[in-house]
Length: 211
Length: 211
Image (tube, rainbow over the protein chains, first blue to last red):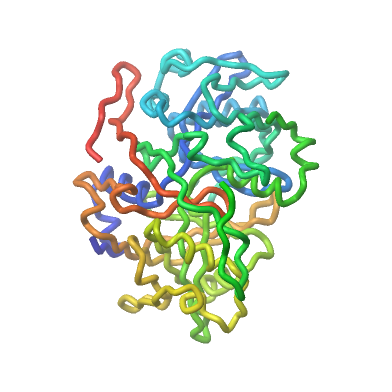
């Protein structure tokens, strides 16, 4: 396949969406939990988690204009909190089911077979089945001029994860944790480690690190 | 591990960077090729490729403030073009070596054992060994207020990829292509497909799709 910009533009719409999304590569498939001001819980799968910075610890999420995920966006802006839940790879089918446009009064937790969990005074629900549970505090939203996509940035307010997946240097091993990842809009994947390498310097070859 | 925001803040710096980056999950490790106005080629690994939209087809890259990758940023802004190269998973060691701070006059292509390739009149170099080669056209840059990170957005100007990795619906299979992915700053991974599912609807279970 060798496509120029004008040819990409004239692809059939669904084919183009599948192609450009899946070419962009594998990334985490996370469940984002929120609660409306009226107390309704909401759960949605996102493949747009972005590492923004480690100090302060900040992650981003992209919201495309006019999608079902606007429930998540309005909830997290109104309440100031949300959760990011990394799931076991075996649950890919149920995770994908959360992307359906359920009526507003239906909780995706119940509809898709996940259990709500509340921790301390964090108002947003976690997913009990998750491997990594992160309480997020909403920090800012910024519209991208190019296409109206909204970048939401949040601070990591609390991290809960099994010690066994994290080594002495703070490295979270995605194969050991068997965390769910995805490719594009509808395909799910798991991870196999191939190697971890020392800090690279021009004058010496990198060395293998423990993982 | 159960860490609160204040505890995350007081972690040792390198431990925190490893933890927050690796928890954020697996993503593509791509090589970005550029050429300076004076004709010097540059190659750097990025783990921050972001899908921004399919129509128009736009991808983003994050540039942290004050890193070695500023060569890439200034080159792509000045020349208006760059390349994004997805690599075979077996080449993780050489890919990681490109993250070293080589002197400005050294080309990472030669230093790390990759071959430059030029296609049509695109001024930026591709990596000959890549599985997927995308010519990018610089569109915009936007600073994120929270920490000075720069989001660069570009249009997909040309896509070159082997037909065998793409099915009739436009789905690029990352396991079949054996594409390199990474976890955090120094760990490399490959992908195993677990399933692909039909468009989810509230009133019916999702069905498996070809992948």
